[in-house]
Length: 100
Image (cartoon, rainbow, N blue to C red; front, side, top):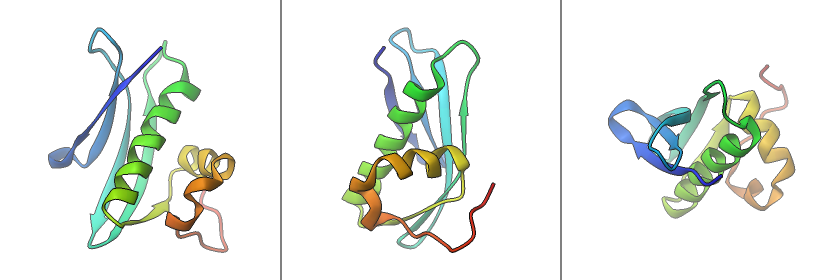
């Protein structure tokens, strides 16, 4: 399934919707200057969590790349996704302590 992802700046979140326009999931964030902190990823019941997370994560990482932002992945789902997608590593600020 393909998801359409939109950035709702006023709500500080990316939303993924299916072909019918139903909300499949969201990724919340906070922006301070060139830093974007990704705080939570949620997937609605009945949707493929891996596919929705992938769509949201790619959207936020591509947006960060286009805007020259540094991403702080506080959300465990995004952090795990980034562990498998090293092509975005230079955009990510990681600490020595993992947030769970």
